[in-house]
Image 1 (cartoon, rainbow, N blue to C red):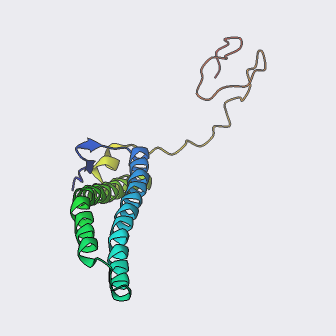
Image 2 (tube, rainbow, N blue to C red):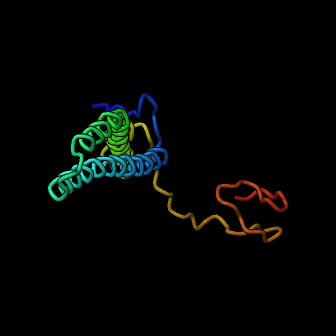
Length: 160
């Protein structure tokens, strides 16, 4: 079963990019939601005050105020559509970034059974047991021996 890597608008993301895009999308979503709530709040507040003042003041021109509220609604529809569209893009981005992080999370824990094709191609080698027969220092100059080096890095003497 080969699982295809999820993409974000056709781009393959690594885990770091997915986290950054998720954070930016979350911030963008919250900003767009706040703008939409402020816009809708202004419309409902003007409707509320129109009804309240119309009942208190007999000379209050309700028709003019209702026309103003209708004008506010009609003129704000493009902005409302734009910010709703941005909220949809942010939601899509957050969901794709979550899928991408789940995709990479599968590879964080190695599957030693070798069932996953990507892990099957990787070779997990355990560190070999330390060999106590090999000296830890050069017998000529006394410099510490580097791992798997055949010659001393200080004097060039061939190590065992």
